[in-house]
Image (cartoon, rainbow, N blue to C red; front, side, top):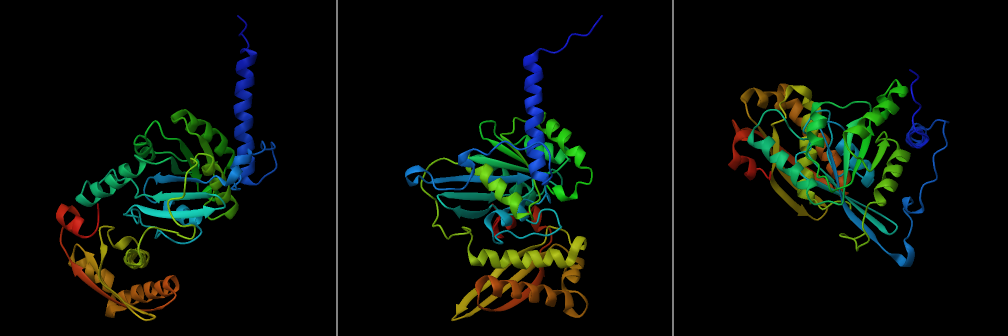
Length: 343
């Protein structure tokens, strides 16, 4: 029996999908190939007719350590969320704001959704994730390009069905076999009806600009939520503790459990001088030794690097004092978790 050829309409549809994916991929990789279709006029962040403004909330979600905070900082154009190689560096709902021409993007960076170690802290972080995606105009779902595992699937299952989702295949620069990207995009399309696919590297400005153009199309016409020059809704006090925590994680590496945190004790301004005092909270005496280091050298370096970054951020002199205290089991104590500023 001779096999029947597929209907011409089906063949044409499949070919169109393949051509669209190839065009998008060629543009993303910066390689010659199938010429990408011209972007619609509204994709460019240009003034709307009669000066209409666009503004909307965009949640950035994904598994721990997939690059969400790095992407947020790139989209905003300035550091508003701390980063490190340690999973679960982001612990709060961080808002980053970018205003271009008549469009204001309000990005919400979320903690990576935790599926292990069901502590009070992790339950708090997961509530932050689910709360962030419940009332936004657009969701940016970040995965590593050509990868999709159980942690990714668990985050994808949380996303509401009635909110458009852009799939960002991040860390494209780490993909050695570029021929794997196109079939991976096809597989991802079968998992969820994504509104758009954006393979990219967060450190490439042209990729970030392209993602902004894609996001803009999904934002409603309405007044801006914030003044045009705002970059975040977080206070300088909050940024001070976050920067100390970033240096703590970066300089202790994998030795120190991620349950360590930083609590602000003092934040005072005297002219061009800011006096800041904070306590690094750990769960064990051995962890305290890791933070302090031999002769106090590790703690001194954490303080020095945090102070230098804070001085750049505030454009002022900073006097920073750090202490280390042990609070055994704090991460599984609901009362202490809330007292340390977690939702």
